[in-house]
Image 1: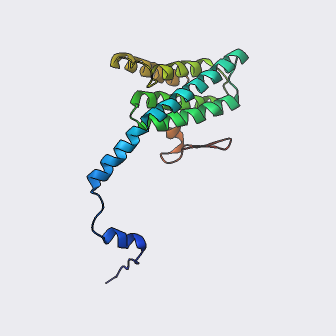
Image 2: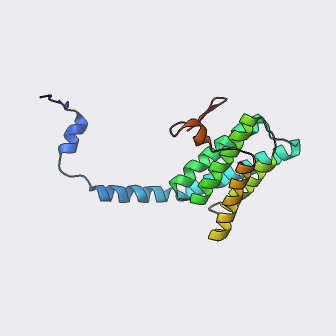
Length: 176
């Protein structure tokens, strides 16, 4: 018979004590805390959208999107994916993942075309939490069109190529 010994630690002693709050109360408190951060998150999302628009306009003036600009787009897109997922902005999360997939595909294909990126940025702008929400049918149509752009260019989601846990690394930017 194998005996497993669990060492006594400060945490194990604290867990054994009576008191504290219930799991349901802890979850409720955490949800309230997260909700209190929604306004700040919406500010960051708006700032990120403005940054994406600025990158798009600069690339449009140059007539192409540079690799450095694409890496910036990936960083901003990743931030939006995280915030959209955390605060329940499903369509914004889908569009943000799509711009990441588009940009990653373009980097790997050596493409510098700005048009597909501008389309994605415009779609993301329409899904900003600070904007009036699109009707569900319109939202579905926009997301379907983004998928068509990816399909047309034969780009697949980053997660398909890199596995579930780690999307990979591009020029020192780790995509997770």
